[in-house]
Image (cartoon, rainbow over all chains, first blue to last red; front, side, top):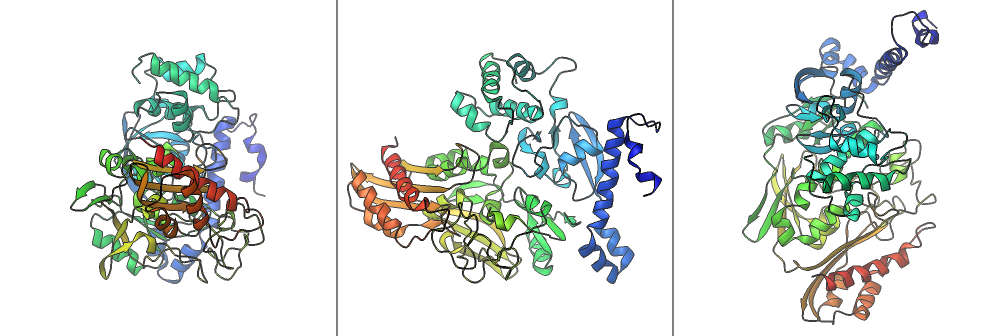
Amino acid sequence: MSKDHSPDQFLPENEGGQSHSDARRTFLKQSSILTALALTPTAAIKAAELKFEEKVAAVFEKVNITLDINGKKQKLAVEPRTTLLDLLREQLNLTGTKKGCDYGQCGACTVHVDGQRVLSCLTLAAMADGKDITTIEGLANGDKLHPMQEAFIKHDGFQCGYCTPGQIMSAVACIREGHADSDEEIREYMSGNLCRCGAYPNIVNAIKEVKNGGHKV
Amino acid sequence: MIPFQYVKPSKQKAAIDTVAKDDTAMFIAGGTNLVDLMKRGIMNPEKLVDINKLPLRKIEKEDGHVRIGALALNGAVAEDKLILEKHPLLSQALNAGASAQLRNMATVGGNIMQRTRCNYFYDTNLPCNKREPGSGCGALQGFNRMHAIFGHSDKCIAVNPSDMNVALVALDAVVLVSGPKGDRRIPFAEFHRLPGDTPQIHTNLQKGELITAVDIPEHPYTKHVNYLKVRDRTSYAFALVSVAAALDLDGSNIKSARLAMGGVAHKPWRLQEAEQFLAGKPATEASFRQAAEIAMRGAKAFEHNQFKLKLGPNTIVQALKNAAAAV
């Protein structure tokens, strides 16, 4: 094993100048690039048989997109396979949006695209070109938390907190859509956000308080 | 996910030509099913043709029908005023499916095209004739609790997972498609296929053909309707059994009925004999029970889904009762 891949490199006491979490993220990035290269056979080998340079370049061609993320316009180049979730977390360091299942089953990755709640793990970043994205980082107004964030804290709407950003993004949308008129309706329209800790009753209470408190969401 | 090229044409013809000419190309709209399948290596297109620039998003009343564009989002259709007024059964079915987030992404065309959720189709380590023709059906002797009781073959016992499709087949919808050889209209009941010997072909859509819209003809089922979905949790789960029921009542007598089931076959399962039986009968539990018995004729279950033989008729009766009582 080469020095570059020594696990010691990723220990916190390493002198490499990177924090543990940064190093871990770099490692994940590096290893996913290696995985990507290892997994390219069908397309890449077929391409090699034809016109190597031209075809390989096409396969790895990046797509230029413009996204408005939390009020800030950004020009980005993304590989077509990149999901909006991975773009946010891995390229833009907006790690508030969580990767739970990565298959559209848990809701942890919920963000707003053009004001509508969607799953960022099933959204290809290239397909979001030109859209406005709001993540959990964009919900608060400076240091002042969004009323839904306040309500989740007040009502203990979480234990481990991993599903919480997705729950809050979904909860805000649930009220905006007009689907928070009863406990039953809230539960139905929040069903796409799973909470393994089972904080559901408290989440419902938090949403009800924001809804009934006349807060602007 | 293997690398792929991504293109986003603004003309329908360009989109169709690209997919028609390239065996490895696929259309993508909402992506809620295709991206999932690509991540798991079940579908491996080398080119994705994003159709979201095409003007196929409108929901409009036209002469004799409502036309829903293929790119209309499931959530938008479910809450559309025209749909709520003219086709409440469709609205109920859509809202019974997926989650609010997924309904904000998934399109009508994509919902029609979604693949089965059979575990053996999803697990690339296990045999599946649908994913890998000739490899066998893992579900036949395996864990087949979610599987079909109608129309299955010894090659495949998977079910179509869509709720929307069940309402659309009950409402005699027509799928409008456009392809390299021109446009055609496919009655909803003829759009999806039974597995037979070729379960890998799940619809009658030809290579390069694109769904552009769905027409729902005018009908009298605007009030006494119910989409009843029975599942392992109250919300956000695929159906064990679902029933779309619609009645046209004259007082307490049934003038005509529409009935279809989901979660029971490789395609949305229309129950025309039961519908014919109900016409002219009183809207009573006894009539509903007899209709349900007729509906279940020919059902054949497997080791783990025997319960559907009882759950099926009970769900039909309850859906018809709910429809009759709807105000």
